[in-house]
Amino acid sequence: MISGDNNLSSSYFLLIGIPGMENIQFWFSLPVFSMYLITLLANISVLLTIKTEESLHQPMYLFLSMLLLSDLVQSNTVLPKMLLIFLFNLQEITFEGCLVQMFFIHSFTVMCSSVLLAMAFDRYVAICQPLRYTTILTNPLITKIGVLAVIRGTLLVLPYPFLVRRLFFCSSHRIEHTYCEHIAVAKLACADIGVNVVYGLVAILLTAVDLIGITVSYSMIVISVFNLPSREARHKVGSTCVSHICVILLAYIPALFAFVTQRFGGHTASSSQIILSNLYLIIPPMLNPIIYGVKTKEIKRNVLKLYCPQKSRFQ
Image 1 (cartoon, one colour):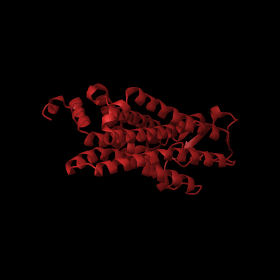
Image 2 (spheres, helix red, strand yellow; image 1 turned 180 degrees about the horizontal axis):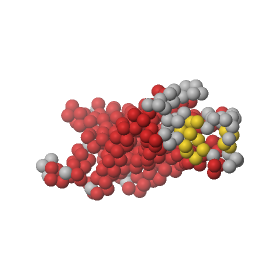
Image 3 (cartoon, one colour; image 1 turned 135 degrees about the vertical axis):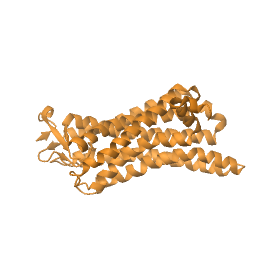
Image 4 (cartoon, rainbow, N blue to C red; image 1 turned 180 degrees about the vertical axis):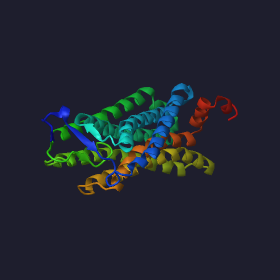
C-alpha cells in the first residue's frame, strides 16, 4: 500500500518496462545503449566546441547550448534506469525517486520547448530584422531568456509531484512504463485523478503556446524568404532554417502522439504507446546535435578540429 501519508520511505513502484514484451525487452538494451552513447558523445562534443570556440559565442549557438544541456539532463534522467530494467530486470524505484524522475522529465521537456521558441525567434530576427540583430539579441537578453525557460519549466511542472503525492495507492504499484510519467503513475491510484488529468492538459496547452509562437515565426520567415530578390539568396537563407525545422518536428510530433495516447488510450497502456513515449525522449536528444553538426558548417568544422586537428587543417 502506498499513500501520500503512509510510510513513504519504504514505498516503491515497479517500472515493468514495455508491457507485453517483458520476456524479450533485454534485446532492446543494445540499441538503447548505443543511442545513449551517441547522445552523450554528440551532445558533449558540440557543447565543448561551442564553449571553446569564441566564433560560436553567438545567440544562435548559445540557444543551441541550452537545448543540448536540457537534452543531456533529460536523457540521464531516463536512460540509465531504462537500461537497468532491460538488462537486469531492476524494476523497483522508490516513491520519492519516482517523483524526482517525474519532475525532471517533464520540467526539462518544457524547458526544451521554451528554448525551441527562443531559437525560432532568433531565426526570425536574423532573417527578418538583420540590421537590428545585434541590438535585439544581446547577451543580457539571452541570459534572461535562459533563466525564464528554467523558471517556467520548474513552476509549470512543480505541482505534478504534489498532485501524485496526495493520492492513495491501495492495490497495484506496477507502472506499465519505463519511466515515471505523470499520468501513468496517477492511473494506479484508488482515488479520483481528475485534478491530475485537468492540470496535465493545462500544462500541455500552455506548452503548446510555444508551438504557436514557432509557427508564427517561421510563417514570417517564409514570407521574407519569398521576398528575397535572388533564387540563390532564397536557397541560402532557407537552408539555414532546415536544421531548426527538423529539430522542431522531432521534438513535437512524437511528444504530441505520446501525450495523446497516454491520456486517451485507455487505462492500460499498449506496447506501441510505451515505445512511442520512449522515442520522444531518446531520438531528439540523439539527433539534435547531429542535425546541427551536419547542417552548420561552423560546428562541423570545429568538431572535426576537436577530434581530428590534423585533418581539420585541410577543410
